[in-house]
Image (cartoon, rainbow, N blue to C red; front, side, top):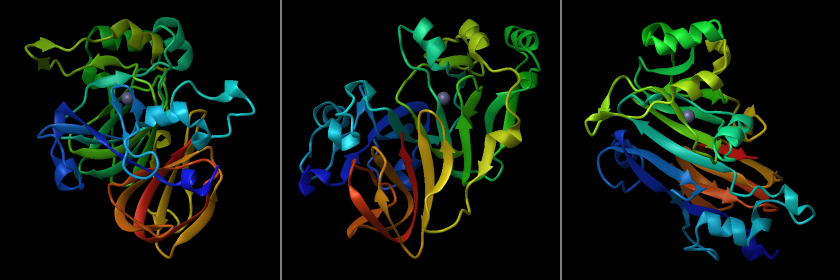
Length: 321
Ligand code: ZN
């Protein structure tokens, strides 16, 4: 591969208006949003519902899914074993601005999704809290001690007993394994790294109406897939605000992704040795190999990119498989 093809892949995000969305992606972030109620920025996505376009360079104008199909060598050395190449770009990075509460939901694992959702993948996701109100909470887990109690609480609508809300603050990191009951509450902005999949079972929607009707719930599937008992709240939420500077701090390594936090202060340089490395600048500004980058930029360092030098004052969330 020549040097030109190893260029950094900068992407244009895709925006989604949601009933629960706000305006902060346009006010606190340097984005031109489609209007009020913009809940999601799909920053690195090859999903058919929001396929990011390359901003500049050799591949300008191509979508990430087109690059994945046409230039697999950018994303890993799959040539020696064609079967090792995932059938789609495996990750999806979003920024979420929740002005209001999202519904309470759970995702299946790969095995359940394969059997019950026409061969789909399950979904594992994780959240880094970018900003939130001082009294912010998230729903992570539940209070049922066994499957019988879980079934009773859900069927009888005992939501205040069932739902476990945990306090969160800026810089917290939360891994949401399949089977984890979860919901983002109003007043939170977060960066989500997830498997590129969309199978969601809605457990409860606060009895809200959308166009005069309640949104569909998936009670039986939810009872099937929810893990009982839930992981403890202390295990679920990790403080990642003040990690060592100028190093890749690993936040999670699971079968689907690895996620790191970088606090660039003096500068850091290392070799890009992952199949590919996604970077999202979440605060500050600086340079990568001399190119200016700032809060709101998202890019992919391709396979075999080589040495990376980051300078400036910035915070970055990085992800790979
Ligand atoms: Zn989810």
